[in-house]
Length: 95
Length: 317
Image (cartoon, rainbow over all chains, first blue to last red; front, side, top):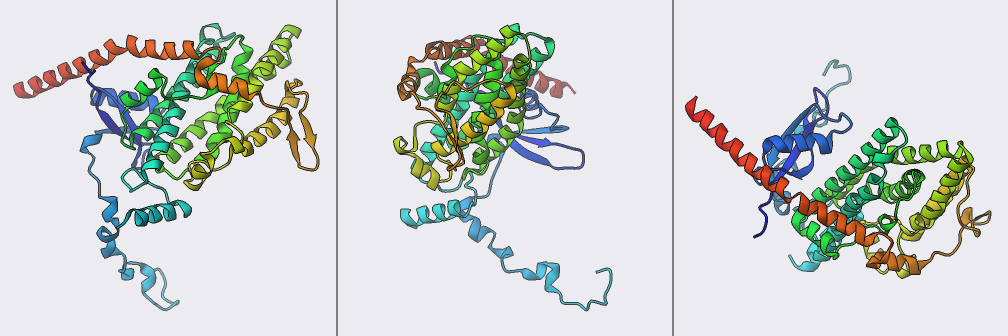
């Protein structure tokens, strides 16, 4: 009988207070607690983490890269969202 | 869109150094080659733990034991980063481990040599990790995102490995006559296998052109090997030792070291399973996997039990 597998988890690490959690990679573990302990051993041997999030890979949902062009298109031509679009005199301070 | 159009978009991205990510379209051949390259790199890290683990219980001081353990732990971690990167391409850990254990997948030839003395720990750190760093730094800009990111992480950790190794040899080279002999002997045994780590000569390496076009290889075998020889030939002067190559000589015109012929027969034998430790290395990995089966099952059973207890606790509350 084939051995039952440990599920795959995605690991997110906050390296320092004030920073976001960043995706560090993945690992296999039997449950969330083991995933957190394994993540500590694999990804923070040099104190690279103050906080760890683990999410089972099957629960990560992603946008489809094949559709990226059309999906992100609405933002593509809205240059007026950028401050440089607005032409104002140099004498104007603090803006 | 036709296959050619997909391939053109893909190659344009690679040419512009835009990273390919897991769900992006990629040619089947790119996927297959990368799975093989990344997983064999991962296998090399895991098997690479074995020759060094051999000396953990016999390290001469507590400090040296601690640093050797830390290096071996890092190698386990490196293997895991790389398995994780390979798994993003649609393969499973089981499949990859199965290929290693059946002998279908290869790992770096260097790890099929025995570690006979403590000085071997120094020679491995200096030469083997040194050669690995030479290969790995350019791969930090490999075209496949997860692979490149794993390489960045690995490179950060690898530099202590090389310094640890060189420091071991430095102390031995300044020690008693017996220690100096041991140091030179280790260098004599590990030099040529390290030079062979870079693989066959470019003209005997048919996949190089395609790998360079796909940017999963950034320099050729011979380019990296030359750089390694040039750097090592200078570094060894600090040890007051010699490299076991009577043909090693600085070429003022080419601004590189000329070096002697490589024994490709030895390389072929070791790659094909007939090196000094191939059987032993594979047997150790297979045994570790089989001996660990109960741990894997127990962990799942324990997780189930914990989940049930948690549910019961919530129902009562």
